[in-house]
Image (cartoon, rainbow, N blue to C red; front, side):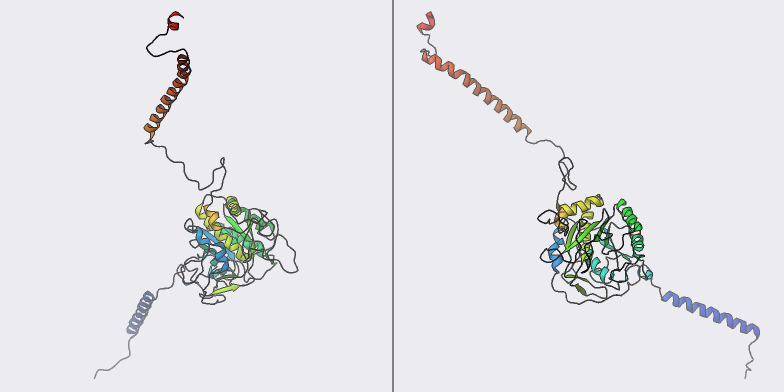
Amino acid sequence: MRECLPPSATERSRRAVRAVLSGTLAALLGAALVVPSSPAVAAAPTCGPAGEDGLVQMPWALRRVDPAAAWPLSRGAGVTVAVIDSGVSAIHPALKGQVLEGRDFNNLPANRGQCDLAGHGTMVAGIIAGKEGTGVPFSGVAPAARILPIRVLPDAKGTNDEALPGQIAAAIDWAVDNGADVINLSLVTLPRPELAQAVERALAKRVVLVAAAGNRQETQEDRPAYPAAYPGVIAVGGVDEQGGHVGTSVSGTFVDVAAPGLNIVGPAPGGSGYRAEPTGGTSFAAAYVSGVAALVRAAYPDLTPEQVGDRLERTADNPPQGRNAEVGYGVVNPYRAVSSLLGTRANPPVGRLAAPAAGADPLSWQRTVAIWAAAVGALLALLLLITRPIMARGRRRGWRPGRRTDEAVTG
């Protein structure tokens, strides 16, 4: 019988090395089987309030604006709309694939703007660029546009936080630096120099800015809302289902255009349902206008922000007096905004038809013959006019062809 002796120190060392190598190999094989998720393809977070399923009727606001009439001409393709708000869900069926990775300036930086605890920004984004064909009668105004979500609001409550204007200014700058063509600002804050400067920088970079005109409180008089009241920003008021001004929508000479702002329906961030906002607000009216601005920017990419605003105003459904403090130049009209040829004889409209190329005229010989025939005819007519009095005078004197009268011989 073989005696089992305790292993020597050398043997113990060898066993230890083999154990370490075996463990390392197992770890490597396990790592090869478990692939970590890439930040670029990580699942979007699920956060925010859920909505009601079973939307069966198209929202009145969508019927009123009727963006589908403009889709044969423009769907917003190639346009990025930054939504500076409470965040935007990237998992809702109407927004899946539409939402880029953005930024959170509040307290959830890891979510890249794709977490909406309030539900406000997701509704705004859905109105702007929600997809059609998802099985429910809902879509955005510009379904081919993309959303760049930027979170600055923890909730949908109004605030006079002195830090907020600076955050919004930083968000505007970040949106411009990251390719935004249109920036939607469905919020109101304090007017501060850093905010005004950010607006000016965005406009100088040819970025269109659309902002809510603000919602009046019962105990508060109308006063300019910012950033909507800054020069160059398209300020939006709200209208109801009858086309009248929404009572809570702030009025003022700074209001440029209007859009639906009452009884609004849009996607909810927590799932696939939809939320209703009976009281609405100019936040959602601004979203409809941002969608129309995206259609215009896609159709006419060379327009400046001022020209985009001018086109929205001149093609809006104007009030009887042309403009007023409640709805500005009236409710935006997507079809007219995209299709209308605006301009003067000295300043031709953008989108006009090109002048036809010069070519050989296949009827030129017929035109030459007609000119000669007209000339010969005119000459014959002239001869007839000249000879008619001569012939008449000859008849009175008894003149006959081939015979000379005595008077003619002797006279």
